[in-house]
Length: 201
Image (cartoon, rainbow, N blue to C red):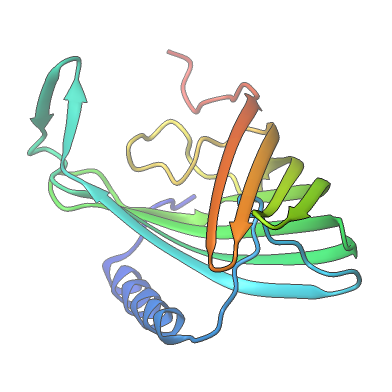
């Protein structure tokens, strides 16, 4: 099986992501609704969307020593994800997401990786909502998990597109809103399963 991204496909994919990022950036009036915010989808409403992210690094910490590695140069990760949210009730939402991830290194011999990563499913419940003259305080309980959708290489860090493990997570989210001001705090516990790598030592 060929796990490696050909240069022509990599160039096409980068251009596609760039155009998508621009379109997302110029979209007006978009209101997010994810497993990490204090927004709920009304009953029997569905909202789908596209998310894009880009990150890169060329230095890392080795104990207290900050260093770089000319053998890999700058490692960049790009993600474009499809996500959707459905309101079972006004206080209970189901969310699903599937990301496509690509990773590259600007130097050395490590090959780029790309592919569909993990399917994630979340259930968000608005457990408490209190409104008053000082604003609105809401408490949410969120549970969910993920599982790999493809047989991507996990034992290929830092260029692997994921960890290829199944996860279960629980999150407590507290949101405060006063007119156009809001603040959100959350804490998450994640249980990650063991994986099998492609070598025995």
